[in-house]
Length: 365
Ligand SMILES: [Zn+2]
Image 1 (cartoon, protein in one colour):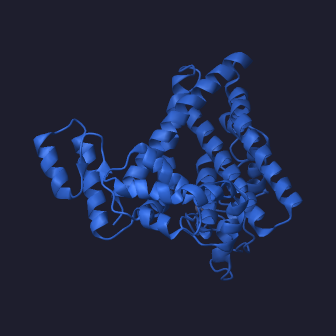
Image 2: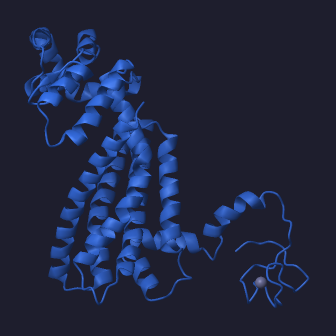
Image 3: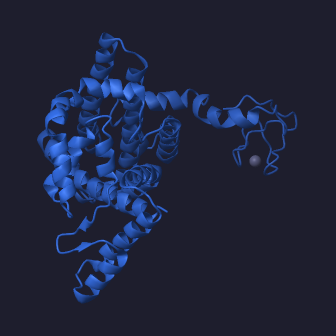
């Protein structure tokens, strides 16, 4: 509710109806002065969510700590107490991805001092002796080959962990051929001619990808750049992908519940609330993760990691609690259905991520 000054004229500016109190009984417009202080333009948006009888914070509090409460309240028909589901989801999604965008996500090949210090304590410590003994051997053996096998890729993965090795850098940018199992192609031409002779069932998918790869390679983009660009683009497209995923999530719920008792609409509300919760917890975990980089005090960082662990476990249990409270099925049935739903959604989401990575790759230029 805004605190704009109420007009003395009791005729609604929007529809001409007589207005007794603050809001027009016919169209709902607030009968406030036409002009307001300039800053009202900016505060109005936030006000919508915060001043409205504490509606926004009440919604967030219930969303975080009372699984299923928002959904039940909404489905019972009480719709003025909390922020409506679609508005809530859009707002949470906006805030979350906005905060993400403020921090650089991709750190591939960064020479950040802090990163080095951190990695030194971990895997790299173990890898260092290996570097001393075997690096040159591995490098020589990989260089001798024209085609990289899976083992070589593994070796390269290991070498990546060794810091400050100029040789490793060279290998990573080395001109590698694509090993697609049935043939190896150095250029787009050799790929096309081989495919013309020996077409495959999946060519309609494979061809554009390989062509794109060569196109990017011609532009002088290294594999490292390619990967980091792809991750960045994928991340950029994630909010859109999630929006596509929501109806699918609701559909899986619909499949596993009584079709007469529960409408697709009901599942849609549950889905919007659950994803708003997920985005908020992901945002929280992300922010806590950032906190650990600010301080070097071990006890404090341990505490933060403990909190992150608790939030993660809670967010996993949340689905089952919310699911049980909204659909009110027998405890054991609810858990079984919940596990099946989580499993199905896990695979569906992986599929979505793969698709997202592919689309993002094709959008690179
Ligand atoms: Zn009116």
